[in-house]
Figure 1 (cartoon, one colour):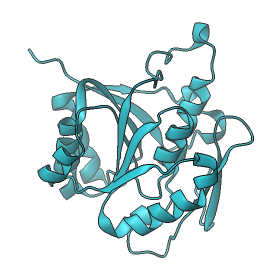
Figure 2: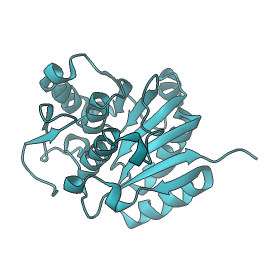
Figure 3: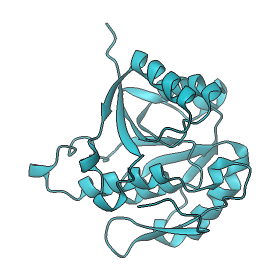
Figure 4: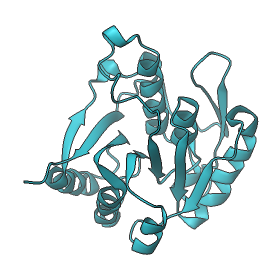
Length: 224
């Protein structure tokens, strides 16, 4: 699976008849208006295992989405949020900064016939505690894909994840190295507050095992 400059990307989710149509604008000054590989990899990882029989499924407990609340940070075009919604994570709110909202709204509108409802979305800046509290945390899942690329935003992102995630919750993270400096700081800060589990690459969906993209599970460290 390779990244494409095509203005529209199709992503099959669940049964073969459900296909998300993802519209992107690579010419925009905001990276959130592009579809990045990690979001596809994350959705298809869940897609693979949520349809795997329990007796051979190491993620059966993790992917029990019943009665779970979720929030996506830096949702961009809405790929991960829409995909996971279709896979059963139905109580989810998609968030990003204000300039990205038009791209998100466009994709929600284009895919409304597939989603069959209006997904919740909100403007959220990671350093805005009032906005974070207005999301009504804690959440069982925090979703993020390909959002670590500016070193200066790393502390805000980690802080937002901690503030939003329930004590027994899980961060589903699609990740690719975009900046060595941001990468180093991010994992240093995560190591202080989270238990980190990297999904083996052969557990990713074989058609969406992008060579530079990974999926991580982050869980809060237990307080001593």
